[in-house]
Structures are given as structure tokens and as C-alpha cells.
Image (cartoon, rainbow, N blue to C red; front, side, top):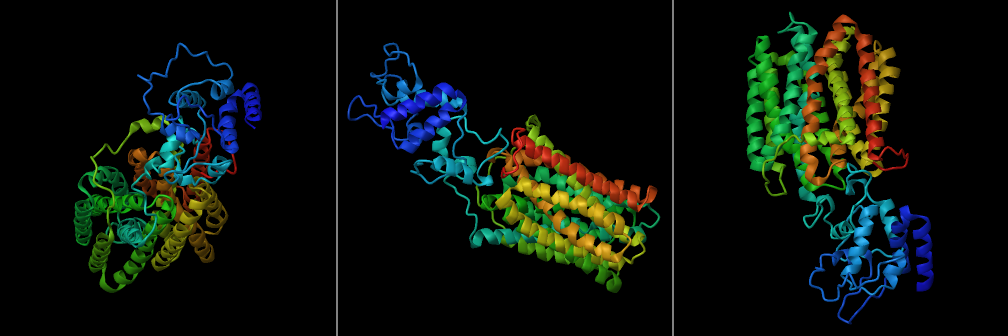
Length: 563
């Protein structure tokens, strides 16, 4: 049997040098044999490549049996492996150094300590490896050393390590509920800015253009996202409690002062700057703690947490619609401040950080732009934000311009956010199974088809608007919840914070300009042109995400790749 194996390996090595090492490792493992290289009974025998990697750290210096000059230079690889008498500590070095140059693909997901792959298990493990188990930011998942396999076998690959992620349990899901409430208060307000913009444009700021009024919610969303980039290091350094408490104070104070505003610059400072800062201090820890508790099911967990934003987008327009008619502007805004206080109290009570505090690091890592995959993904998310927040901010104004009442516009926006809630929940689970980038690309395609087939031709029909609210709400909810997960998927564990911060420092610019640009188009070129513009932006996002997926595959397209 051993002679036949040697002949097979010689044949493979001589005729297919590119894949020779891969074939060698798998054939040896399949045969269940490893050369018995002993010079005395006390020397170790390595049964697998993983075993060899574990013992590679043994020092070759000072080893009396290690005599390089006296050894006959290796001829064929298999002859060197099977017949040259070398000390065991030398054999792994030969194999590891040679295989490192060939970049042998190995298991991409961790196994329990002591795990030894048998037969074709390596092949099955690679095929069944979950997408969340490895980073695809490096050119397709390869490890440059067999020693990385031994590390993965002990569960240390990409941060799973000894401090494994719970990925479930009562405490982990209670943290998700806490994130849900904080995101309902912060991002939920962002998802419903269109109702406030429509009201301000018709009352306190009626002498300003739609584009001018659009800078108020645009600044709120921009500060909420861009400042969140700087909140991350504070969260790492000072922990959860102080950051969330500061966010509560800023956010509630901004809303209470908003009730007293009468001039344009009042709204800019109180809602745009102060409330936006509070939203950033609340939302960043709410999303950051999700990564402390989940890895394998992070798509589902983030979808549940981000569903809070959709719930806030449903609740705030309906509350404002009822309160404005009954209590007037001031007490309506104060009622919103009270609701936000309750949500923040519930969220703070449930939110827990699992990992120890670290050193504050720079939130932006400009070296990320050396990676084409990151560049394509950042541009794609920029286009998504440009579309989504313009749609949410201008949709109520569009409905009113079509001749419907402000109550109808509030109901349609709430319906869109209800569909968004369902979309975020389902998209997270689907993305964990079929791949985050794959799911995102499919939903973006559905989104721009919905705009051009439903909104553009039937925007003047109430039935068409209801249909569009349901369809577009369902897919657009996943745009925001899957985007940060995609950034995490293409990043190493140690780089996620820097890549996320760098990405959203650029993406946040889209939220600042999207509503003013759309508002200007509404007034100058008309409603239909604005809708066509939003659909075109989504087509651009589709192309950019396709390029990101292609780059993750090292520019070798595969329909079946789970990314």
C-alpha cells in the first residue's frame, strides 16, 4: 500500500506541480498513513499535517541529529518524505515551508481541540464552511501556513478563540432587545424624518424651499452616522454606561429644545446638531454590542436589532399624526421626548457588554483603501444610503404633491416601515444561510425594479403607492441592516472597527446631501424625474455590489459561492 501511494504521489507531483501539495496532503490523509520517521523510540511520529504544525515550534538549533550538510539533497518530494532519515522536528519544517509557498487552502472554520481530519473530511469541511467563519477580504480564503490550521483547530480563527461567542441564550438575546429599543429611539427617528420635514415646510418654515428645509433632517442623519465613527473608540475605552448616558442627555435635551424652536437656525442646532449627536451616542453602542455576543448568527441578530429602527419609523409618524391634531406642535414634540426617554431607559437596562475594555484606537484606517473589495463595497453602501434616506425623507412630500393629505403620507410612511421591519428580520436569517453579499445584491435588484415598475408609472395612484410602500419597504429595510454585516464579513476580526469607521465616515456624506438634492429636483425638474433619479442610484448600487462580490472571488466569477 505504501509503495502504491508513493508512486501516485510521484505521478501527481511531476505532472501537476500547481496542485501537487494539495493532492499530497489529501491523499496522505485519505490513506490514513504518515511516514514512520524514527531515530529512537522516544522521538515523536506525526500522524497528520495538523500534528506536524503543532510541533513545528520545536527548536532545530542544538539538535544533535540535525545535520543538514551530511544529508543527501532531496530528489523527488515523495522520496524525501518517505525514505530520507531525518529527525521529526525537521520534517514539518520541510513540508510547512514548501506548502506555505503554494498557499494550500485549509479548513476555514474552527474545530474543537484535538480534532484530526480523516479521509476526505478536509474536502467536506471546506465545502460546508459557513461564510461567517472566515474573512474574504484576503484573496479567496487561503491560509499561508499549515500552522494556521492548528490555530483554527483550537478555535482561534478570527476571534472565536477560547472566548467563544454565545450566539444565543437568554442573556445574549436580552442584549439584542436592549439594542432594539435604543435603535428604535435613534434610527427610528431617522426613518421618520419625512413627516417632520413635511410639517415644518407647511408651518414654521413655510417661507423656505423644500431643499432648504431638507438640510435639517439631513444634518440630523449625517451627524448621527458620522459622529458614530468617533463614538466607537470612546465605547471601547470608557465602556457602555457613560457613552449611553451621555447620548440620552443630548438626545432628550435636543428634542425638548426642538419644541421651543421658531427660526431656521434653531432647528439646525437643536435637532440637527444636538439631537443628532445624542442619536450617534446611542446607536453606536447598540450596534457594537451585537458583535460581542454573536458571530455565526450575526445576520439574524443584527436584523432583529435593526428592526427596532423600523418600529420607530412606524410609531413616530403615527404618534405625531395623532398628537399634532390634538395637542399642537409643542406638546407633540414633548410627547416624543417622553417616549424616547422610556425607550432609552429600557435599552440601557438590558444592554450589556461582554468583552473587556480595550485601548481607544483610531476610528479611521485609510489603509483600507488599498483593498479593492473594500472600495467597491464602500461605494455601494454610499449609493444605498443616498437612495434610502432620500426616499424616506421625501416620500411624504411626494405624496402631498400628488394631491393626497398629510395624514395619508404619514400612513404610507408607516406602512413602508412596517414592511421594512419584516424585511430586516427575514433578510438576516436568509443572509446567514445563503451569503450576505448574495442576499444584498438580490434585494437591491428587487428594489430598483420596484421603483421603475411600480413607483414611476403608478405614483399618482393610491393603490400604486400602497403597493410600492409594501414592496420597497420590505427590501429597503435589509439595505441598512445587511450593509454593516457585509463590512464585517470582508474584514479580519482585528480590523472590523477601523474598516467600519472608515466606510461610514464616507457613507455619512450621502445622508447629508441626499434630501437637499432630492428636494431641489422635486421643485425644479418635477416628481417623475426625482423618482427616476432614485431608481438610477439604486441601479448604480447594484453594479457596485456586484463588483464587490467579484473582487471577493479574486475576479473569478462563481454563481454558487456563498459570500
